[in-house]
Image 1 (cartoon, rainbow, N blue to C red):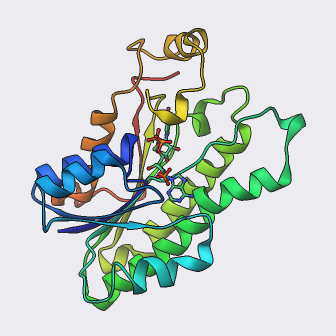
Image 2: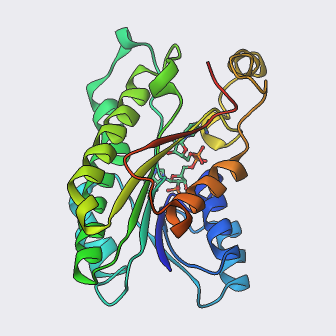
Length: 240
Ligand SMILES: NC(=O)c1ccc[n+]([C@@H]2O[C@H](COP(=O)([O-])OP(=O)(O)OC[C@H]3O[C@@H](n4cnc5c(N)ncnc54)[C@H](OP(=O)(O)O)[C@@H]3O)[C@@H](O)[C@H]2O)c1
């Protein structure tokens, strides 16, 4: 199967790429930086892994840069994993419109546009394809300073549910994985005290394992999940 994964250079995206490669799939990865870890995988899985450096902050570029120059119509796309994101953290009274727009471009507008072209590819090849968006537990539980970021994930969840309704008749599925806090670059600005407070809100009292998130994504993309669509699957150590 051929999968497009955004934000493949590190963190959760890189882990998703690893799991998909380990299970014999081909991955088309997109991020701004061509990381050393990704390059190592390219050597290990030559012919199965491809990379294009794209800045996903401009939804207008997506057709040209991703679908005309990389995942062209000659490629039968079986799935799209929307993982790339940025976090704009601040309290609401400090909200800055430019920063908000910049985050929404990467987290919401570009993924919507990629979904459009991914579905068009699936229609062209009559593929019963699958879309998986990566959301965040913050959209469900709320954390001080994450209102803007969480709202972008809430938008994705609504988009996914409606995409599932719209295209289900043609066998195309759309689901969301909702991870809890993970130890990645995105959460690296938090102090240990802040992290401990967050982990206390989970049943398992620890950070969410990125491997568990990646396996869930791979499961949703697979035939094993053929009857699952329009769902949000929480992988969050039981956050309350
Ligand atoms: N970390 C957490 O605690 C946590 C919790 C819940 C949900 N999530 C979600 O999980 C997903 C992965 O997060 P992570 O923790 O792995 O984050 P991360 O380590 O910061 O990785 C983010 C990825 O997105 C890419 N990216 C960011 N801006 C981009 C842009 N403008 N154009 C292209 N690529 C861009 C980055 O690549 P380049 O920098 O090379 O472009 C990188 O590969 C995100 O959707 C995040 O919202 C994270």
